[in-house]
Length: 107
Image (cartoon, rainbow, N blue to C red; front, side, top):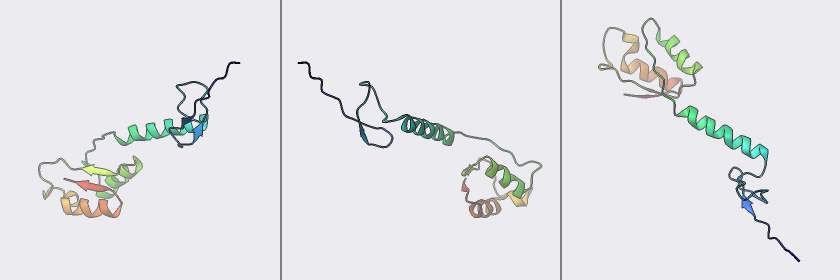
């Protein structure tokens, strides 16, 4: 009599026990496999870096562009953030406006 032991695995997405069809099985179902794939895509998306200029834009339209692209953090790399050329884009105004809109501001 040939008895085979069934291998028990844990799903890498929901952590439930299951019997994989192959020894390399990582997920208990297609639903968990797809959810894990979507999570990996979101992680990659969150690591993207975008650039934006403010010439020809008002502060509110600038913020609307950030929101439309789901930007959560702005890193200001300008030499001078307190210039008088565009007072609406000085450090204090941007910091206040972005904080109110839920966007992190870093100099």
